[in-house]
Structure formats: C-alpha cells, structure tokens
Image 1 (spheres, rainbow, N blue to C red):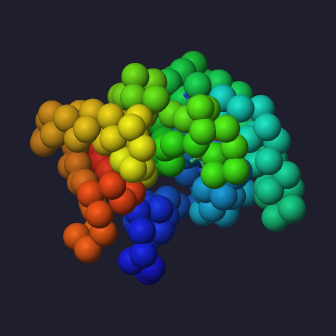
Image 2 (tube, rainbow, N blue to C red):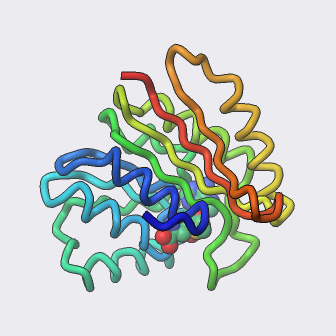
Length: 188
Ligand SMILES: C[S@@+](CC[C@H](N)C(=O)[O-])C[C@H]1O[C@@H](n2cnc3c(N)ncnc32)[C@H](O)[C@@H]1O
C-alpha cells in the first residue's frame, strides 16, 4: 500500500472490494489508467463499464486496454455522461470509481461539474450491490472542484447510516486544497 495521495488510496482500498467476475463502473475513463486497473481486477469473466463525455478519452482508453492485452470484451466504453449511467448499466455493480476534474493533458473546461457529479453519485449508489462501494477522488484546488467537495460532503453526511458507511479521507499534513477521497460502502 502506498499512502501517498487520494488517488493511490482509492486504488488500494478498491482492490479490497473488487473480485474476479465482478461488474464495476469507471465513471471517468479519461486516459484509461483506472479502467485498465479495473479490467485486471475483474478478470476475463468480469465487466467494466467505462464512461466519458470525450470521444478522444475513450479512444485513449481503448488503446491502453489493447496495449495491455485486455481488449477482449470485458470493458464497455460508453460515450455518455456518467449522470446517465443507469441508462447503460442494468445490473448491480461491486464498485463505481470517480476521478473528478479534467484530463491532465486536456482542455480544463471539460471538467466534471457539481450538478452532474451529484446526479451520477446518486445513480451510482442506486446501482451498488450489497457490500459494494463508490469511490470519489476529488480535487478541491480549483473552484469547481471545491464546489464538488462541499456538495459531496453534504451528500455523504446525509446518507442513512443503516444503509451506507461513508468515509471522507484527507491527508492531515497536506493543504486543505489537496485531493481528498470519499468512499461510500453499501451495507451487506
Ligand atoms: C481526471 S480525468 C479521469 C482520469 C482517468 N480516470 C484516468 O485514469 O486516466 C476526468 C475525466 O472525466 C471526464 N468527464 C467530465 N464530465 C463527465 C461526465 N459528465 N461524465 C463522464 N465523464 C466526464 C472528462 O472528460 C475527463 O476525461
């Protein structure tokens, strides 16, 4: 385990949830790093639904999966907003991964936005199988990211404790603006 930043933490925590054969969602495919990690975790019998609004991101994701020998049907690459994930995912899922913000090498205007992020996280919670988890890596160092962090805090704090356990993790020796992680698990 690498206790380095919210992104690493998210990957490490999820490796404890995801098992071979699971159905999972990457809500923000981007350059495909997380989609690849999920494809490896679920194995050839699993399913990974990967969303992005940018066709170029899905093309980069597809190329990464091909280069790593996992473009074998386990991943479904979907060019649509994650807020519409219930239109595409018709089965309970073991995890939904969000890595908010924009593509590091891309247009910063094509960032996730608080309204659609909240709608997508609510949809993700409805799709979770018992014991499954939603992980959200959030970047409050920019204005929209700070709005997302505040809105997610409110959403997480309002969840019924009998149905979900919601964790917010931030590094105590990093600034308030450093990336933080929300991890919400549905009760078994
Ligand atoms: C930080 S990047 C994701 C990085 C990615 N997880 C990786 O491993 O490379 C955020 C991505 O979210 C996408 N995005 C923005 N709004 C979205 C939405 N409503 N639905 C799905 N994806 C969205 C952006 O196009 C961008 O590619």
